[in-house]
Amino acid sequence: RLRKLLRSEQEPGSNHKVTVNTAFRQVMQACAQPALGREQTWITADIMRVYQDWHRAGHVHSIEVWQADSLIGGLYGVCLGRFFFGESMFTRQSDASKIALVYLVRLLERHQIFQIDCQQETAHLASMGARPVCRDHFLTMLETAMAAPTPQWGAGQLLQSGELVQAPDLAS
Image 1: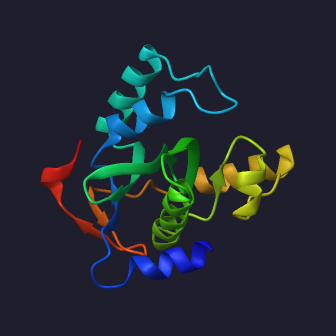
Image 2: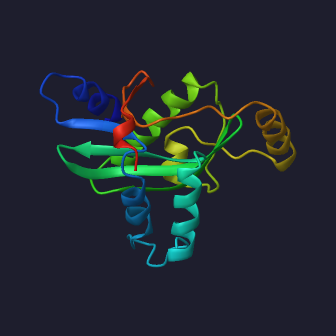
């Protein structure tokens, strides 16, 4: 179903697009909203301020999924070295957060980043290929990834290939 949806996004006339770092505050606010099975959130006003500062410093990034002009899904996380730490994701339309994750993976691959720390073991993430890693292996991967420089991300439209069409005036 997800493959079919991803193919349909490439068809002429599709009103879906995926962007990077163009609506960071909106993504965080959406992630902080109560959801089914999660009435409380760890994303407090203080956490939002800290992450927004870190975003401006270039270490925290958002992936946004749009239908026309409506933000329907997304995620954000921290990139340090060659490691991405997924912090939170949201969806307002079926599969929108999965689309954000697929596009994120393709962007990360272009930057030679092959690890995403999901921080939680959920059926949703497992359906996308996530798997648990033992602590010793995680620390070894982290040490290797942190020895590499952190890539610059920028802001703009993200293509399915993982290519970012930069648009500096869109940065949030």
